[in-house]
Length: 455
Image (tube, rainbow, N blue to C red; front, side, top):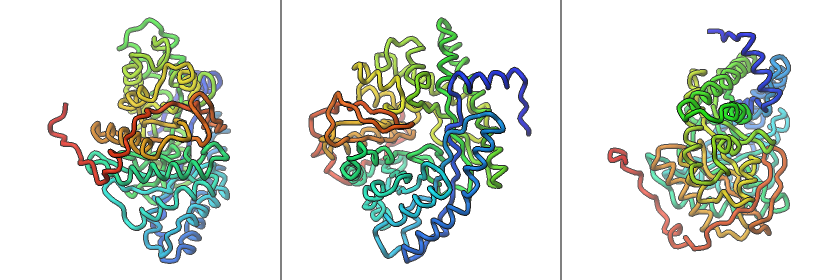
């Protein structure tokens, strides 16, 4: 059924775009590479390049045309592909860096800024391809510009693969060291998941899941500035009324995402997938999830009450967005990346927001510990323990959680690291100094939880 818009709605949307940083954060084309397998890794690399450049050759052009015609900023045009651990499984060679370079070259050719899918799903164990991919992550992220990587180490059904958790701690340290000249930038393109969704359009965790069609268009909307303005205009309403206001706002934002996503899918002649309802902040002033929480009445994000405020926000965004779109997926909720949110950065530097409070907030947000810079001398075992804690929250609560942590070589607490662009500025945050080495080195798999005795 066509979507109808009133003149008042159109004017309101124009105001949101011009004054409140409303945008479509990303149009992401998912491409299956399952037919690119071969025993010769050079042949696989050629097939990957050929298929991505063929399928996505008009992606950027179509996105920019829609943006011009509708007057709606579409910030990123991106690609996600089948987890490369699956595509490369049949190769005789174990160095998947050549496949990452093929992805990077294809992304450059079609003009997208990121391509996701240098990924593996190892929540229950490693195959040969998974091991090869994990061994290649650090070098691949160091030698490519646009490739993003993710590894799913846990799920509610399988438990937590602690061997994979410890391996990811090692990989994150290796990646940081190999990209230390760019502030450990490689780690900003690497996500460790629990309960990963297969249709997520947001980097760095995007990949084209094995249940997805041959090609698909997924859309991620943004809009913290719009919600912030709505909350600020209603400083004295009760929580029920506040939730309703946020729901109505999320509904309007999502309608725009649905419109753009369907139009892009139509012009590219591929199926429309999902709208990801996430509020995705940027380092720009007025485009902050932290500012929304403070507008609800918190003196500073991170203080007592922050988790409750985030829970209300997250739930209201989902409820409002679900009314506006029949196909909702991805991560959907509120992102709380530290370096990408001006309010979060300010709260960390002023001492109100700690790692422990961020971990508590991830129980109710859409992802997890995201874009957190820590001292370069943070041990592998501590990073693995942070991943394990976050995976446990996701496993027990049947939700997606993730860790994107950046141990910055040479940096200490109180210093900053500059990533630039949407990746922003990361204040170096302290971690606990007591060791978890004996714990994380036990290995094996933490069993899946019993779901019948929920409390």
